[in-house]
Amino acid sequence: MKITIGTIILAGGNVANEQPYDLEINNSRQIQIAPAMRAIAVKGFDRGNQQTTLEFKVSKRHPSVEEAQAYAIQHAASLTNLPSTLVITEEPSQDTYSLNDAVISEVQSVSDGVVSSHAYKIIGGIFTKD
Image (cartoon, rainbow, N blue to C red):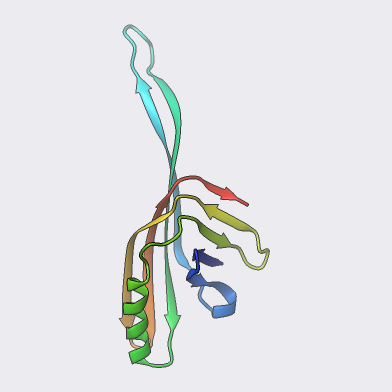
């Protein structure tokens, strides 16, 4: 699975041997609850506002400890002023999914020996299959 936001590759997929793990997708909708006097039950109104939260981790192997450290620092610094559409490409089917109005709300980059690991939390609007 390849995950990109604009030109930034968050998980390179099979080609780069970078598979995301601990993938979690949560969809929530804005629901207004209206209680009524003497009613048996409240009534819910779907206001049509959808929020999708995507969380995942990815690890990358580097040729040296120094390069792993440098990548962790540089990658974290590169995640500003990004486009607002995140794209997930399934492998091997090449089916794509988009998360519109996506913003990286949290990123944690860690260097451990020759491996850098990154945990992302991305919040956006509608999540669709393209």
